[in-house]
Length: 219
Image (cartoon, rainbow, N blue to C red; front, side, top):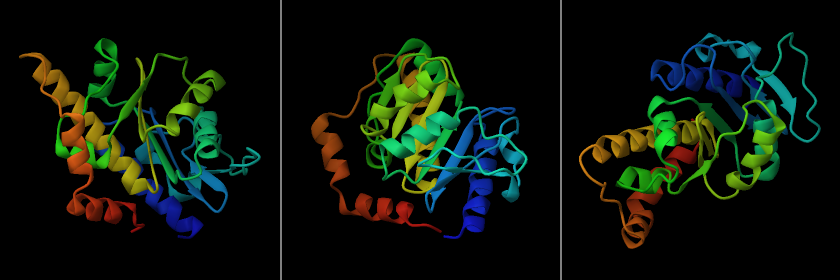
């Protein structure tokens, strides 16, 4: 995929995050990796306003920012440290989904409850509240991106990773839906969750392996 294609792909998923109310206003930030650089949303923009030429290129190894007249997102260190910590990551989606934030206000561990969550996301980990945009938050994320592809940030939001933007983005949707289901079910009684054996059965299905393989392909 060429640099221009990455920028267009970023615009596509940036617009999805806004249209699906996973962020509001100028909140959230997304990035994708290409040939040693990450292309990150610019600071101060609503994600659905960003045009292809406005994504800010940052060298992953050195942190050098290519000058296009715009500043990278204030969460630049969080993205940069994540790519350095786990080279398998090809894209990062950081959003402020309402059900995910609500979940972190009352709980920490999001259980695995249904097949799509088990197959497409798996384990979700949690980081207690850390001041946003700081190196402290970036440092806190480093061990977590080696452990799971979805990370709840206490009182803040959600970070998902994937081999490409499509995979990272759909993980965001599934985790938000999971938090919503948990909170709704909890109003009635303690939710029934999948056992370790049930989770492993789903993960081993050939049909799920095929679906995940398709998600990991670039469009």
